[in-house]
Image (cartoon, rainbow, N blue to C red):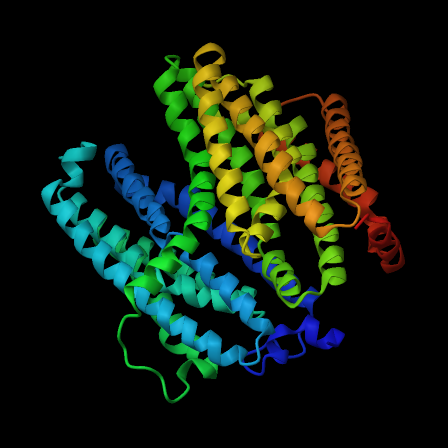
Length: 526
């Protein structure tokens, strides 16, 4: 197999490929699309709030946040089927009739998705009718709360088939394309929400505005863009539109279960600590400290995942076709890249977060230094394992995932119930970081590195050296700037951050040299 074929997987498969687009360009497209998606997510969750509060009361905003959170939880209904499909699509790359087998599996999985949507949709409607969310959640005064909750949850459930098409896009070298389409839907949805707020102002109108754009994106991708991009999906001679056998469907669900466990564990590690601290800590100020500090730690983790995700289908492609040398190089370089990104962010946050926290909370909530340092350093330490996690998801390692992620959830819960009552939010932070480092890094990442790299121990030493150097340099640079620039306030904060960015830019400027970058890449143990 030639380098061109490896670099453009879609081209080797005869249809819908990435043409002459190289791997580096695909990765840049994916990273840029993910960055925009994160910005749109922040816009939805932060910048639209003042617009809502301009029209709504605080209670009505709380009702909308509950509806929005319920819509976000619908992702668990996928039950790992997207990653199961991705792994099958990757496995077909080495078959003689890749396009034909892909089309057949795609159509069968699409019917499973439609069946899941139909069954869960009926159950969802019945549940909302029998137990109105306004009664369960205490929003009796909101006249359209139940209708808005039904529209949001049912609408997001109807978007699940887009996961299958999105998985095919990833495997065939079009990761950035699907994310840019999602970005367009998010942007149009935000514009529609503002218009609905101005014209109607009800919860139902906002829910319809948000969901309608997501449904439009799903219909466009599944019914138009995917068949146009991959003509083999509409090849003549398709089997009739009947559901595959129950045995086959159950088999797919069982094989998808480990991926579902991994994803649910990730969601739990983000959301459950907030609930545990709220339930086990009586000091409401400490609870607020925890919730606000977790925001920045979750942001670091989210950025690392977004950096790792475009690498995952490329790694999965190399793994599927057995190109071990290219796989080693990409994994080693990707691991260093994700780690360096996390450490650079953490090195910049540590010296400036106290001042930002005071500005953000207007000084009403005290800053907790040990809590912040624990969460941020833990985020930097666990960064390499995030690439291992997404690679495991894209290399059909279901047994490894269910063992490690299931164990991680157990360890986290055990440590939380042991430490939170004694240490408060710091105990929750230690539980999260310990479960990440001991299980996700110590087991999952270690196994992935041993199976992928020739020199895993040397690679770990390289990661540790790079992490310490980057965090220390960023942290000390920030401390020097803050010590030389006494003062406070928004202008002082912005100026200090600008100087830090300028200093970091100067220190990183030698990396503009292609020759130096190539030498550094060659030094990374693989």
